[in-house]
Amino acid sequence: MLVRTLDEVTDTDSDIKSENWRSKRIILAKEGVGFSVHETTLYEGTESYFWYANHIEAVFITHGEGEIEDMATGEVHPLAPGSLYLLDKHDKHKVRVRKEIRCVCVFNPPVTGREIHDEDGVYPLVTEDA
Image (cartoon, rainbow, N blue to C red):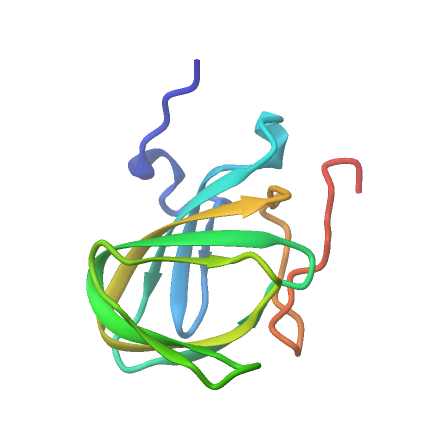
């Protein structure tokens, strides 16, 4: 059994910060469970473009308010506490934040914590062996 708190990952190598968001990686590929879990904060007033070409991501909103746009269809969905979106088709998307959003993200395959978004918003597929 693994028990880990956010405080244990805060300000460590598992706490990734960018201009628009902060991602605390709670469970990573090294745990060997087939997925990773992150608590992510998206900052108020920001717009971020993402495309997880190599991962499936589920995102559950716990706090805040905004919207997600499907870049393929132009469809826009509101985001608020209790909303979940699943990027099951490696969907290119934009997230616009009206009030700071906190969410729980699950990735498959799991991230290692060494990934960096490239110019297309993509995480490369990095494995624990790499």
